[in-house]
Each structure stands twice: as C-alpha cells, then as structure tokens.
Length: 415
Image (cartoon, rainbow, N blue to C red; front, side, top):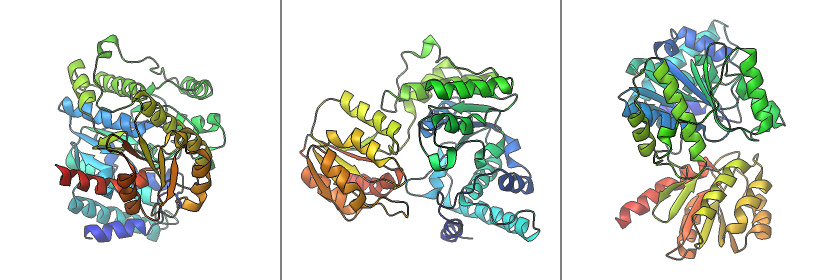
C-alpha cells in the first residue's frame, strides 16, 4: 500500500474513539502473529489522565540525550498520523509507515480468515502493532508507550512493559472507565503487574489508595517520592507548573532505566528535560498559545498558567468534543477571556457551536463570537486581539491539529 491508501485503510476501521473496543486478546494475537516485536526492546508504559504525553516526551528526550535509541508512541496526532510513531526523535516516514501497515493488515486479515479473531482489530490496535513492528525493525533499545485509554484493557498493555509510570489521575472518559475517580484509578492501576518497576505521580487520595492497593496485591514497591535534590535547579522546556510533577515522573522513570542497565547520567537527565518538546501543550508560537486541555484538570492547569503569566488582553479560541465536561471546562476558562471565539471541529464527536454558545454568552467577560470554521476563527482572533494580547487555542487536541498548521504558516510569513 501507498501512504494515502494505508491511512484510508486505518480510517476505514472506524473512528479511533467512537469505534473503540477495549480488550487485549486481539492485540496479543496480532503481536504473536508478528513474532512478538515487543520482546525486542525494553518497554516503558505511561498511563494516567493528564500529563502522559508530556512525561513520555520528557523521558524520550532524556534517553536521546544519553545516546539511547528510542521509539516513542503517543496519541492522538495533530496533523499527520506519522507523528504517533517517532524513532530516535524523528517521525516515521510515510513510506515506512505504509509498509508496516501492509504487513499488519495482512496478518490481521489472516487471523480473521482462520477465525482466531471475530473481526479486524481496531484502529488503535492496528497502530499499536505498527509502532512496535517499526521499533523492532529500527533496532530501538527503549520503547516508550503512552497508554491510549485506561490501562487494563488498552492495546499498549499487551506489550507487557517492565517499567510503568502513572501520571496524575482525574475524571475523564467515564463512559469507558467508570463514573468515579476510584473506578478510573482501578483501570489505570492494572498496568502495574508483578515484577514491574512502578513510578507514581502525586495523586488525589482516593486514586492513590487504589494504586497502593494494586501494588500490594502484586508485591511491587512503588516509587512515590520526587526526584532527588540534584534536579531541583533543572530547567524545564515545557511550560506550566504542572510540568514539575510530570518531570518528577520522567526523572524517576529514567532512574528506573538506569537500574535496568542503561547508562543515563544526572547531567543527561537535566539536558533531556531542558530540551524536550511536545507540540500543542502550552506551546507558544508568536502571539498564539496552543494547549489541548480537554478535561477540567487540564483546563485548570491552563488557567493556572495564564493567571501566573500576568494580565494581558486574552482571546480564547475554543472547540471541544461533545462528550467532555463542557460546563466545567467553560467555568474554568471562559471567565478570563476578553474575547471568546467558538470554533467547530471537523470531527464526528465535535460539540456544535450552538451547544457552546450558551456557555460562552453566560460565562465570558468579553465578546463571544460564533464562527463557522477554524480558519475563520483564526482570522477573527487576529482582528480582535490587540498587539500586546495573547490568543489561546484550546479545548481539544483535534482543534490544535486543525489550527496549528495555519499558525506555523503565519509565523513563517512574519519572519
């Protein structure tokens, strides 16, 4: 298959979230049929609610600073699906991606034909297998996998990581993970298996109780303490006070890799943290701040950053998925907007502008403008924002993915 054909095949499996089918059997059978690529390297799995991607990016940067060849698997992507699979700091090439899709598709179809599985694996199950296959072929030493949803039944768990990290847990995806923080924590805690090294971020009490109970059940002594004093003066390239906790997890994961035989110095940990990048997460490009805050905890982290940055005219471009806690997110972010611009997202899960408008008109302190496209939203924001103002694009990584290329294009024109 060519790249475009490969992407269309994957999309034809159903929307990544709407067609989700939690469970490990399909992924495990798929990996077995591919001769278990996950066994070719050390696997680090990162679960949690917020900060998974940032923590994974920091750990990847640390490993590369230490000269360790890494594979990084994250989701979702912003623009191209190739962003999900990074090898030694570079996105997989479209040609390599298409080649691995062809292999995984053939194996998956054979499993169905032999009736070992009832239906083709899902989009996420396919892409997880593609990533692991690509990592084996590239000869990576460490594969860093960001959990997609939950943990107990997430496809990445089939890779049987030897080191796991749990970032802060909050309410999100209740329709899949349960209605309480305890039920959500239970799903994520399941990635902690006998003999793994477990690193746990600071947690709400009810989530921590679940995690510690799981560790006791499988005889794992977790790492709960922040990084050593050596790292107190380390500079973080990723913005926001919440990144301090994510960095603590990344540091302890790096130290766990050190205990597993990888040569990673304190200086290399510091260098990795100072040079890590993670597009779409408090990313500043000219007058635009991009942050994919998509749940109340993420919105609060963004609000804290904006409050700490000091007063300035603020334009907020907001779009979100309809299954998110829109009223809670709006109450956190909308009141600080001098101008609120509502942007529809090209996604079947998107909340309509009509759904968002009542929240905007009741909560925003300034003008609320309803737009018909993300392109229109950017043009309107530029026109409405003073030269000393900030334009914050938030509410969904899918919105960031639509708008970021426009912003990068504008930035190139102003250079």
